[in-house]
Image (cartoon, rainbow, N blue to C red):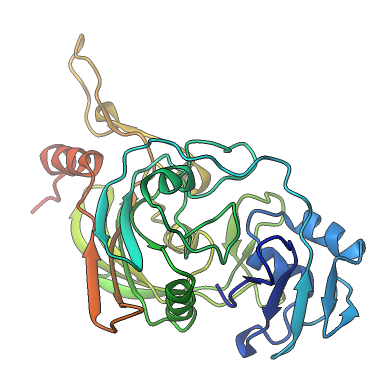
Length: 338
């Protein structure tokens, strides 16, 4: 996040934001859509039109250009669903102390409640497993410092205290947290290692998708990802990616932009699973095997400073079983020719 939403009092829905210099010149509606990812830009615009947003004490328009130091007050729309309830959902806890926890999020789990996903989320599980969670992001996102896509598995940090939450958010904002992902791609990356740079913005015709934007798109934001090839196969690549920025769908968009989309990423590659028959012809009568039922992207490793003690923590989430199963099949049926 670029700034940290801080509720004025727990009962008051009003949120105060202070714009950072990196956001200088961003449209107000775009800025708020980034701060409130649960709300579409059209909803944000309706809140602005209803005089629900003020900048430096004055009612603002959607087209206002945010400046460094602006004091922005927002009264979000009333919740349309009850506060998420605790649910006894198993969690793979990789690290825990009084200030934070690090969880290995499974695939097919939404991080926090939103339209269409009011139960079964990571937040529902967190409310059951932890007595204390930070409340800086409100009742719908307690403890949530950053997010992973629904079908991306791996390491995610949870804040138990507000002070820890602020510190961790600042580490993300100032890019002091090292993030490493593991991916399988459809297509072979030519270079052993390289950077992918491309400004990312919303797709012109599909509000769910992001895309590489041209220089004229004022809403797009700079993005950079570093990748390193671990292993190549015929038609596929196993690689690690270290995003230098944290844009929506960044890794997925960047890999797709160089012709190697994340494997089984329906949004950017057109298919949502990989079966054994996709890798090799099967003898008649042989039962097909599901290898990968979701996109092949895994948040493998995070390295950051502990918000209280300052010591360096490095947490890894092991490679999921479906990754291991797919890699074994690729090594057997799609090895590179010597």
